[in-house]
Image (cartoon, rainbow, N blue to C red; front, side):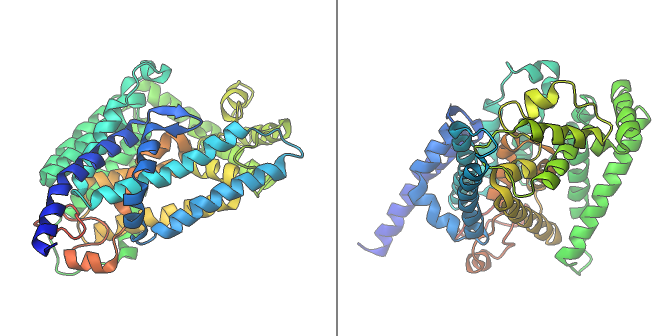
Length: 431
């Protein structure tokens, strides 16, 4: 077979492969359950494993993440067996927890593989489509606040992805301003803070060039400073009543009770801290909480001036398994120190990607949003609900091999939206 024919065949195969990748991405983001934690998107990822595994493992940091996921599953099973002497265990819970983290790994692999077939922004658009289609208007929380508990994140992902795909930074700024207004008028304090930070980063990225580039470390320090400014300014606006009277009253109450909005709004931190001090090695993927665990958690929450005897602890946090309303807490309770190491690896990948992209002034608003949101979710959101953004953030953040990045003549983390498309060695976003 001549090289010309091979090139023609490969070129003809790309549209079909891109279509398959797009469907897989939509299914992953849609999150249609099958059973015991398995989703339709996971099935698609398993079927595509022969094509995404080689591409995934070539990316820097990917083998470490894969190894830590496998180690976590093994550690979760071992901890479950070790805890069975004084805890009830459930094989169903064990399988569900293991399938969840393995599904994250497979889903990230599909995202990484899709990036070799289409532009990063196109990958994000398809993911946003899946999230929007997957909105569940029939949920109880949705009925109480549709924007906050259903529409905000999927629409943010889709609209910011479309803005990225357009190649015009000002479109992303307009989208962010609109999302900020919606968050501010719909009692979405954490979402408002995240969006304000993303807007500041995007505007900072548009500043005139000075001819010298700072280091990634200095960039991360600046981003940390911006986060503090956003937190303080947002709290001041809330206390002045700019986001509504009910939001102001709730914030004042949390400040009075716990000393900070974060501790007052996330009393699960007290439960997680107390449980870690009581049982630092974790519990196991299939281990169920006993009365001692529940009492320890209640004591930790009471230390934050939170009343734990309101049914929330028994019915939600420990109703059927350990649920600490935290990615880190959930990974630790289920997988012990392997889960902590996995969390650290995730943090390194996300922070390095965002820091490098902003340093090189090539940070797409969508990437900054999903990274910042995932960094928030790690201490403050349940693993299950944090999965979609975590999958997209990791999938967009993992860097290709150094040689491929060099051929593409752009940052290994994320491409600029103001340069021309580079050669299709590893198809990244050029706009």
